[in-house]
Length: 305
Image 1 (cartoon, rainbow, N blue to C red):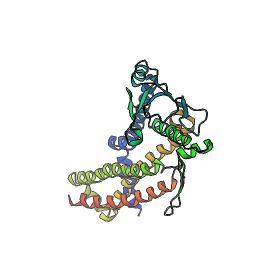
Image 2: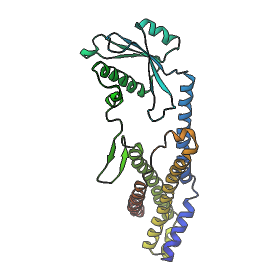
Image 3: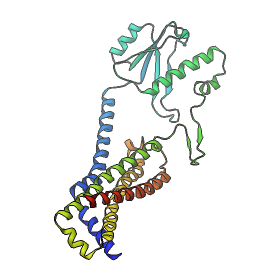
Image 4: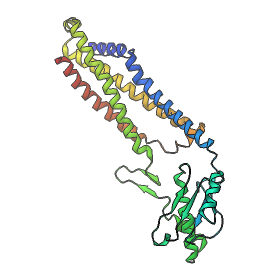
């Protein structure tokens, strides 16, 4: 076994200095993270330069809304946060003039046939947050409720009866509030990408290394001192450790960002989920087993070449 670990140590120390491995293991995650930060900063910069007012006009040709200004919070869980304001206008032309003067971000045209199924039309120069549609729906629902004599204290529940829901998944025992956390969808996908990158890079090192040793007749010297079985097992273990190192680097960067998020404003906005550590553990086990199976197959192919 000492010869196996000697071969594994040599493969690990030799290939870890390859520029291709260093770029895949360290450069790629840092580059992806840097691109993500750049896109976020550009996006927030364009939003701030747009001078959004969070004020929206509506022209009610169906006479279903009260002729008054309506304000609602962007996030009901943040009472001190921003709010959307809907202002009534007499006609579409006056609303268009206000839009051209940057007094409003958009205006909505409620047609006279709205109650018969006609669609509401939104007019704006740029896209507006999707949450504005929820705010408008809440406004219309509350107005309908008042017309039907619903107690005002029940209007918030009427406008969104199942806004938050406690969900329990019996197969995993996982519990969460609201919609399925995005991390539960993205994390398995990310682990699959890591497996693909690690398998592609290190399996290439394994096959090219075997071919080079056969062409340079180094393999003939090795087999006189090391059994072929020990040689292949050592190579698989050494390159397998390289693959696990890539996994650790990627997951370590994810955990670093997760724990730094509360102290970085633009990260705190997105890192509002609980880290599913059980998925990381399962992913590590799956990665290890699948990787060594693939490495064994690549070693066999490399010997036959």
